[in-house]
Image 1: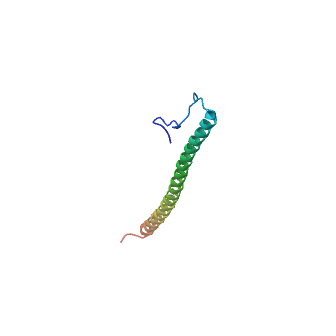
Image 2: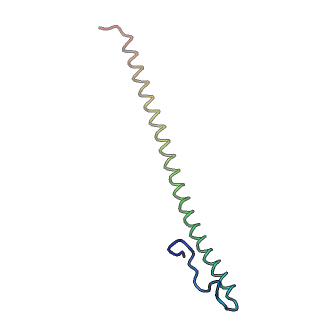
Image 3: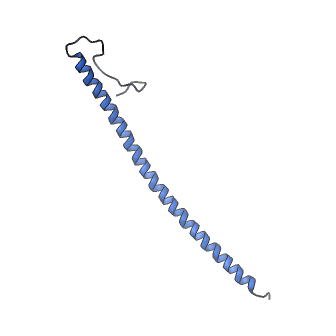
Amino acid sequence: MSGPNGDPHVVGGGAGDDGDDGGDTFEEEEYAAINSMLDQINSCLDHLEEKNDHLHVCLKELLESNRQTRLEFQQQSKQLNTGADVQGSQPPA
């Protein structure tokens, strides 16, 4: 996992340890910490991708709805204009 500043929290030997295989253990622990952080990043990116896909679908639906509404509005406007033209061409009673 990570420490309070997002730095990897590595348990065990540090660079100053004087064990026979201390360097190898440190590298393994360091790689394990990096691997864990990369897994977390991957998980976050997967979550963001899912949210992005959902937003994309929602926006496409909104766009289609707006197109449909605009077409209906244009048809109503044409009908009103056509009706006004017909009434305007008739002589007053």
